[in-house]
Length: 595
Image (spheres, helix red, strand yellow):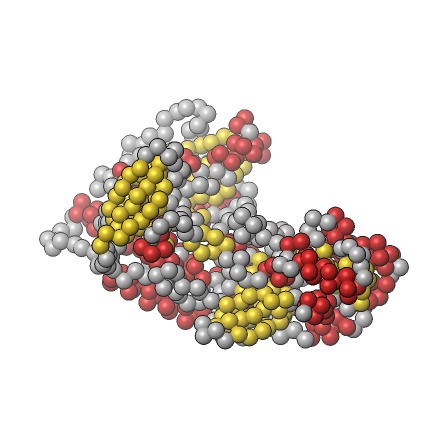
């Protein structure tokens, strides 16, 4: 019954606006309530399934012929002109001062429902309960085509940062074994790696984290349900567990923190025979053998790097450029280093079909690929094909259309204000689902905590999405903070940018005599702002730890002069940043012959 649906919207919202996204009067009436600092719910009829039928039902109910149609405290105000008139006469203010609003709020099951139990959602939920709020977390993992699923904690803990760093460490230990002979260690037996031992240890650790998160939520009195959350109406979600049992819950506010899942290629054989990203790799019960990694994102290169470090034959198939969105000079240096260490690259090709030659664990697959210009077809045989071609926001099947939350139709990402608020005032979003924001776990955690403080503790601090440090855990690690060189030149102009750079040779690598003039340091300075450091980039061991330290200084306004006046610790890699003297503009040599 459409009229009953409309009445539900009216009954459950203090201010309900039925509008069209393309209507200027609808936009004006929303601005009116924003100027009054009054939360409202808007249903965009032109973006809603059965929108025209709903508008017809609205006409029968209200006799209003056009949108917007406004209700305040369940009282019909009317169209734009009638709403402006009621505002000027003080009628809206009087309605809002009634006790009906308190009655509606008291009827909610929770103050906040978080949809998504990843790092950001968990951080926000635990922060909110500090201020006496009643909070629920809904989290559910849809299995991959191979049937892989995991516990509470989201991508980072289960199939992202944590297992990735541990397997990267396994590969570094292999390199350390090779280096150790040069330092006098002698061992006769042939050293080999056990994939099964590694994955079991990694999964056991992840299991302990899953349990820890559940215990933490219980101790902090956050209600947790392992169920799929989906909006079914204003302030209402349906939670469906893995047995199909459904429950309805209401809340005053909602937080979308559903993250992303791997994207398919959409070619024959991709779902049947390939493994997807890290979602499957980190719990794979057998060694993947000869592997083709499709993609050039940081996840693709990280996986390719540690697989090669474990002694596997690895090929990376790249459609265009490496590490899109990162500094391209650094990205290309990473690619060159990986090639020099035996990882093969097939550039400007995309797979068109994957066929199974032989079943097994691993089996044997044939990959057919076409050049991006369409002129060449190649074939190759591999034991495993790992797809790492991007991730899509988990927003299209959680009922956002039913409550009027706008998304980018192409990407599925959610546009938000600088306070992480969607176009529906009582619904917020953080993490990887946000449009135009960094997809990093610490960013989601920070955004979640700050949001909870603004909502419930009268705080005002907003998340900084610019000066964010990050690290790519390729064999030659890459740490970065601030602007890439390309972005800095575009934003500030070449004449206002000074780039200081140098290669360096870690002391630990000198005795094994490996990888001289591969580690690289670069800072980007804004000449017009006292040579303030606006970009920091480093390739080398422990790049994450180096970058983390400098990122705090960058947030405090670090300048080149302050770096020069800092005494370095000798002999460590980070010391190079206190001695940078050669600019790119000068064209001077930055090659190093010693530590």
